[in-house]
Length: 525
Image 1: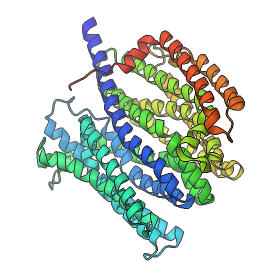
Image 2: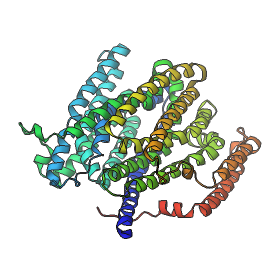
Image 3: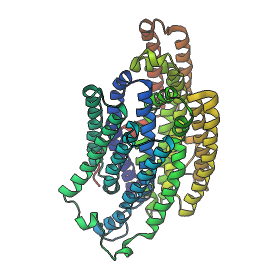
Image 4: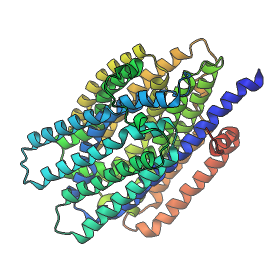
């Protein structure tokens, strides 16, 4: 009995480690390459052009893709295609019949988004901004053509495929933008940004289609199950979950991108550029670490919840505690060292023009915001993975309320505090969502000792906060902005000493946990 119970647990941990490893590598490359490129592009664009690149076009593409595919991604990842005894080909056909609905839905969303922007801005086709919007719409269409095959690859854990495709696509987008900016100096920057996004979309499309059509892992009829008279092949339960998560994506989009909507609507291009700069820099760790971790934990929670195992709740509780402990540890690390080194980081990366403005102050607040962002991602991943249909409906209703509160706070705070106000509104919004997920988690584990919120707190967190106080004092005393290059090494050395001391103490206290996190083992499904 003991060996049978421990084997699934070890398999879950190894699967989580493997999934996280590949998703982390994907994010490191697909986010790290643009981060390096962004350090160059910021110095070669006006603030208005950077606002266009970092906020306005990013908002357009994100809205179209998120509304078109997010619900299907969430629902389809809950499926275990090997658990019901039917053939793999039949399960793939059922999955793909629903996954292909993302394309017509995406086309409608893209058209609606383009029409809305044309109407809102009063654009005509001859306007370069209008042409850039249409080109961005075409880029979204290419990505949506690849979406069904992406969903299939994620469900089959073809993680190396995603790593290669997204890395090549990201590199191609950066190279295309560099060539257009350097070689075609007379081109409108909006057109340049849109064409580089199209290069990314085309590469994603060719990558996934090329793999599934050339390597022939499954029959063409399974990948494209469009035969007439085969309505019975639709999975009714999965269809309902797709609709529920798609409906939920509307609320989540407002909660996720609402600050950019308000920013574009009410604020100046300068503040848009400042927020875009800080958001790209501050969210680097979110996209490179927390996002793949959220995806891998969601996949692991969903698979564990679908099993009929006597220790299912114990395994879910253990996995959730470890996941929350990790994101809390990283979040507290940013609280400790982020505010005191925000100015120095922006000065080193982007120059004095940006560091002496509002950007460094906004980044300080963003470092405090990271911890709630991380906790919300993991707690909501658990809720969405294990919740029943009725519980997800109630979650959707709560998101409607949170969306209204969030938009109202954004509108109020942007007028009084600018970009900092947006981060404060985001923090309050995330705290409300964490509270809702926390209540769900507590009720899920009610009567069980397999989960405790207190055990999620990493040992040695007080050492990190004490180090944060020391580095703040160091910045006040030693760092001279007028003599930055002479005084920064002293400030940096103090922070490095505090970090090494904190890391040593935390490792001594959390050695088994940290060893488990860093010990990635190969795993074959």
